[in-house]
Image (tube, rainbow, N blue to C red; front, side, top):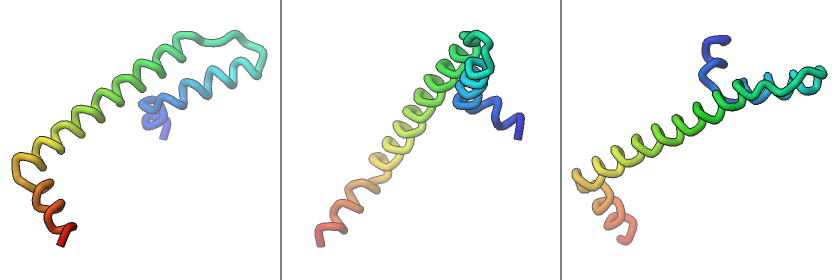
Length: 71
């Protein structure tokens, strides 16, 4: 699970929060890494959505499902 937690942005935010609560300074590098991961995941989600949408348009799935819902 440690490997999985290292690819999730909230783990870095919580580590910084834990440091602040413990009296240590904020680890800005961890927060920067969390921000970069979040931006990367948003970008990847956009690419996946665009690819899925283009596939649905190309194959006619969108038109087919919208016509079926009217009848």
